[in-house]
Length: 308
Image 1 (cartoon, rainbow, N blue to C red):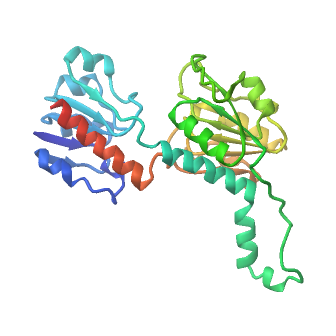
Image 2: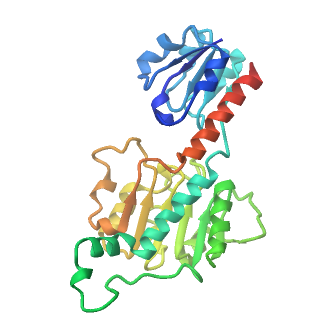
């Protein structure tokens, strides 16, 4: 069996992939440009890809028997043609739930607790020069009693809700599909969620209904001091509108792990947010704890062995 990894670098150098060597001849490419895909996979039995595109032309002119995606999203594969040609396409779901939820609360605690400010206060030597034993220059707050609104109550949304309850928070949620009837938490409209929530955490899919879900027409509905998190997909929050909202003085905080174009473009409006204390941006890392990536590759290995 010949297996080709098209974008090994996305999985991290610290993850051991030796188990795949037991299946046959394995070729690893750190990164593959679109015009390189066909040449690299034309004789492959199995193609493993994260973001590299496998289109109709590639499948038509190759010996591919199985496509494995090292992610949940499948939009980089021509699924219709794969089905016509009888090529199974296997993705992986549920591997990163804990990892994503953990980043959500890392964002929340940074905004609420002001850790960076107080860490810098001590390390700068200011505390050593102080006349008192403490410092209250940056007020911080308890999560207990706050309302967290979750947009998209799937596996990740439920994990965030569970942790929020442990902190003593009230949880409400908005179902973007309208099909979720979870009874543990209150199901509200998007408008009410934005108005009621001290923290809004987005974990829904990106589709025609959710593209630009949060925009200039509803961002002003957020409470003063509210925290908005996007750990779903970049297009869920209109980047120009959230930038304008923050730059125009709206009293909110924003953290995002995703952007509409990734890597982020140098011209992205998000890089023009003026008050950097009110924004946190990370390079699509929520899914990528060591444990999550290890689970991911174990499941990819299983997809190959189960299918072939």
